[in-house]
Image (tube, rainbow, N blue to C red; front, side, top):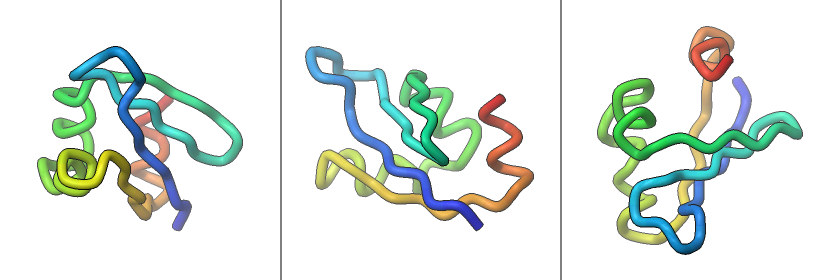
Length: 63
């Protein structure tokens, strides 16, 4: 399991910045929800940041 942190990209209202294993990836919140489920956005909307634990198959979806 790897931990991924998610935050909003400043100045946007639908782009999320993901940090995992030294990589930074940006994607829309819609795509994030499609890949990891709506629960992935729950803390992001409420707190402005979220941490997700991903298995190797989920990490492969980010490539």
